[in-house]
Image (cartoon, rainbow, N blue to C red; front, side):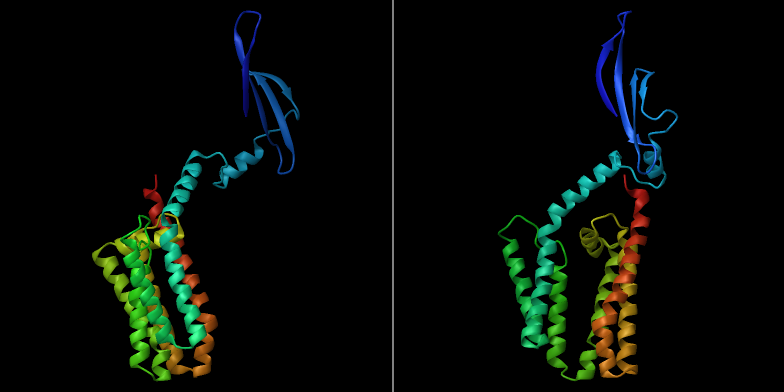
Length: 262
């Protein structure tokens, strides 16, 4: 709707002219012009030019919603603030993958990630942007555990069980945070990635449960199936299964947090 300067009337009063444009069907646009409450022009008499707007509002979608605009601005501000720490996490993970592919040695790749994590801690002391707000520190610790595991246990069967051990360790850390810290550490960091409010304790405890499920699945496949079958599971099945459960959890944790969102 567009408003124009008031027009003068013979009695000295003025009326504000408004021009409204909108869809009276999903494909057709109409226009209505009013001076105050008086109808001056209507392109399609009898048609409701706010048809599409009402339909979208019924679906919970509104282009002009103040709350939606505020939410988008908040998400944009959160992204600008969290971008450095997210890129730092991704960089460490990418370095681990590249080194593992080039050298074929998981321990070398893990120690490379550890060194990069320590470098981030040092660099953080000299820069203002937040490099450690994501999972850089926790990821570095897990890579160190992975490297030690790879060095100590050279058995291929035990290497297959590494996923089970890592899953149990991460689930334990998540449970401790969820039970004793209400998910304050991991919940706030995951919130940076999903970029929307989540109920921290619910999410962290749910993620711990997913970790236990994935550890159990890995143990079952490693002990009941052949090494080739385990490799197929580890490469093509494990990650999609994890992400399906993860995004369901994000959706449910968002629902839990929604009543508290202003």
